[in-house]
Amino acid sequence: MDDALPRRRILRALAATGTVALAGCSGGGAETETTTRPGTDTTLPTGTPTATDTGTTRQPTTEALSPEELTTRARELTLDLGNGAYDSLTDEFVGQAAEQVSADVLRQAWTTQTSGKGEFTGIASADYAEQNGVQLVVVRATFQSGVLLVNWAFDDAGGVVGLRLNQPSSAWGAPEYADQSSFTESELTLPSPACDLGATLSMPTGSGQVPGVVLVHGSGPNDRDETVGPNKVFKDLAWGLASQGIAVLRYDKRTFACEVVRTDATIDAVTVDDAVTAIDRLAAEDRIADVTVVGHSLGGLAAPRIATRADVARVVMLAAPHTPLWRLIPEQVRYLAELDETVSDAERAQIEQFDQAADRIAAGEFSDDDSLMGFPGTFWRSLTQYDHVAAAQALSVPTLLAQGERDYQVPPSELDAWAGALTRETVSFRSFAALNHLLMPGEGPANPSEYFTQNHVGVDLVAEVAEFVAGSPARVV
Image (cartoon, rainbow, N blue to C red; front, top):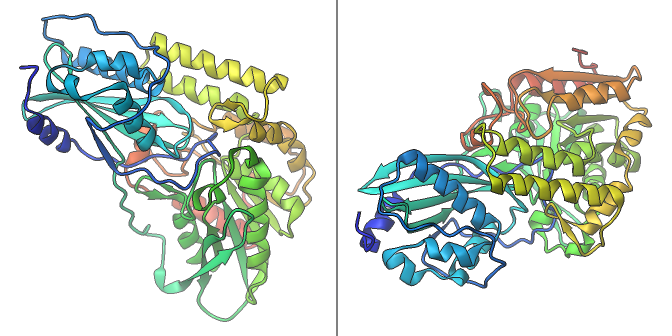
């Protein structure tokens, strides 16, 4: 293939690559994002500053690379991009692309498209295809709060002739278990110190008293639906529960709706305080008999603290970490690195970096201004000062902990650990064999790529939560 492949042809081939859905919910995500929303697509060349060079320059070759070799190369280049090796990456481009791509261009494109996703954590998958005479590899780069599609176009010898970064589109359809005729929705506003938060109240039809639920997000700048690509975890839950006679309030997270000063980010500021406000607001509705706090992932970890500061009748912890978050995140990175059964030197270095950060957090050897695993030091300090297990043990209200057995972000062993720590009679545990971290069913080993396919929260989990909230204890399995 000619290095000077016409740019129009390259762009046409890149545009033909499939757009998959944006993944985002994480067992440990960055709480430092602003409300800036990246564009949906960046096709290079386009522009920005330089970073420390850590990449490895390609050795010139005239031999054609196989699809497997190109796929490996795309993974390595993506790791270099994620680690900020913009200077060395410019040497990988050939032909017209080499004339137009600079370290500034790469950095601006990467920074723009990854804004709000948190720390780069690795690669979920890489898929090879040949389209319009161009050899393409689509890499799904994973972050603590999202995924980016990195589309590499190569010549036969592995020279980069094009690069496209894109945010896959989202499409959501109502789950079959939602009966939209059985509830109505209204828009509310919740006050918070940073800005007002948009919220949606799903209210069962009729005039009688109903139980209420407030949904509390996982990590990252989540909207009120906890949108992950084409999937909407909280909208599924809200519509499923409302269809069974339960009022549900869901709201935009502060880090989604507002500009949050990095050093102001603590577990209280980004999760607990606004949840308490939401609980009080829902309890003020005339038809609400009582309120249950339902937290997912980081929201589940925070739920015991929320329950001590608000008047709740029950607590539901969905995919809630028992292990300290700073120890759990490196395990997520390690899992992703080992998905393809090989761990590259770059992936090994990344795992070591996360392990070292976890050790620093555990030892308290960090400052408030530090950034560790995508979180500011203030956030880690607030978490190290919050014993979530002890807080859960101190609760007196009925508590349900539910977990998917295909969850790699908060693995099923976490539920076992909770079962050993919480022994009071009012605590119930429920495990769902097919569910992943998004509480959605699938098959085989957990893989973040499945987040890219539209799915819905498992119907059995929705039914279990509805039964528990309505006052009947969940079955212990």
